[in-house]
Image (cartoon, rainbow, N blue to C red):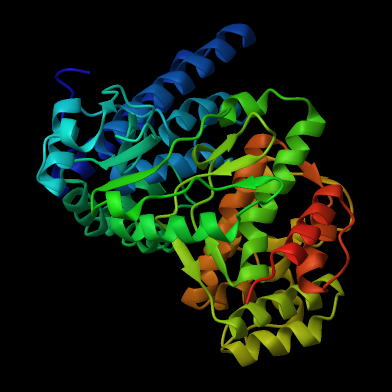
Length: 461
């Protein structure tokens, strides 16, 4: 890793690097179309494959180098079935971009070591009995290392990239340029989606707060039968350094290769953790994605990364549950009344009850269909784009509906969870699970019954 470049913090440099990739892709598409004239079907297919792989490699390099908000955009591309590449090549494209979740271009260890020593004012050797300089993961804001404390405890140490806070601010000031640049190749990525990414990043660069949050969540899920959250050590953490219990497990790529029944089980656990916690505990993690999920040897699913964690007022949760109940029961007028009262619909002359119903279905139908439903990247993408940015809808009335900020954030958890389930190709009756939260129904799955029993043994105030 010697000689790895530090994270660029220049607003102009960061946007220009991404712009070069976008421009190159446009030229590449034109050249490929010309080169395909008169070629056989086999040759055309090979050229398309080469074009997609070239774009993926270039994007991984740029996103991985720039980190921050721009890299987060790359992570999102790996989850969604967007029209950037032909349908036949999308899975290969997404798999290549998926390395951005935990295997991005690493920053030189000397620079990362300096961050730790600056924050604590001590040499690394006085802080840890052992510290492996090779990162076990590298993502959008920091790198994770394996270390050992003086008492022998094995820990994961997440260290922020030097200057990442300045890089994030540079990206946030460049959202307008990013939107114009990306719309040519990604029509769905309008300013609404980029603003949603802005909201998340402003909360993720304080590791001291994240350490306290993770300790809280770890205690919340104490003794859970299938959910595990590593314990955090706030007393050993700082603004740029997070120390937590080290947990080994299979990563998401390994989970993808498991038999259907095992992937479906993992999918249900992912759904219960990321979405169910909102309805059950009035709090939730806002950053579901494959890089934050491990499968422990004992079968529990381990959840990581709590830099983006939200608590929601009970009246807002009650509103979301009421809307889902009305949509599930096809009570269009009741749903319409709820949306008008909450201020989601401000112009009755523009939006009809049917269009209001269509708006909810476009994002949430996968949770309302009472049957076993496989989640695919294509399904996840449609739900995400229509609900985050109603301007994409074919219905005029839907374009007049805008979610208040607190509900947009909870939708983030839904959409990123759906995208993660799509990459896992998990199948379940998501509606029957959802009914436990919105109708107080008895669980119908074995995992649901285990979770119910755990709740009874560990009552929450």
